Length: 137
Image (cartoon, rainbow, N blue to C red; front, side, top):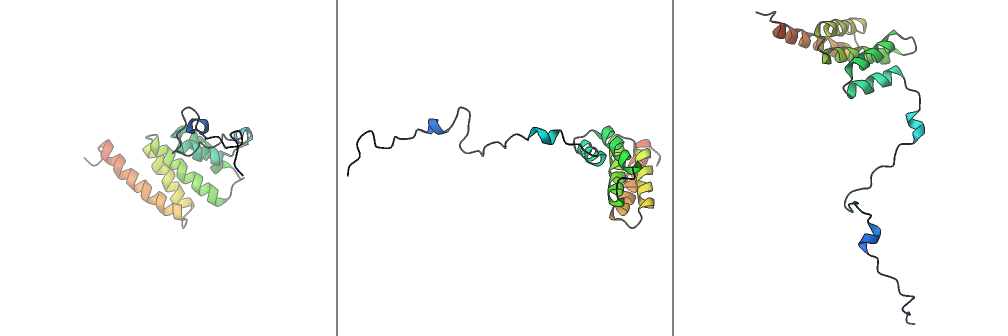
């Protein structure tokens, strides 16, 4: 049984598949985020971490301080907030304040993995700050 002309499948042109500006070798872009996600409430801990990673260290320090001062968080969240607040202070060239904050983390959370990191970071900043300020001269 032979197909008639109007029964034969039509050839598909590449231009019919690919829109203007589309690259057939790249994956399609991800779908846009649903609007409701942008309107979800966030916590100071999440806001502080986001601000730090976006380079807004002043906002990060402020939000992370709110976590430290709140009774709504567990010790793990508080020690992480305290450590990253000290990092945010150091990124703002506030070395003396950052050193003090790192030392407070090391003392308050002795035995925690971030306590030893805070102690090393305080010493590193102290050496760097002494070199910059000429205290070794």
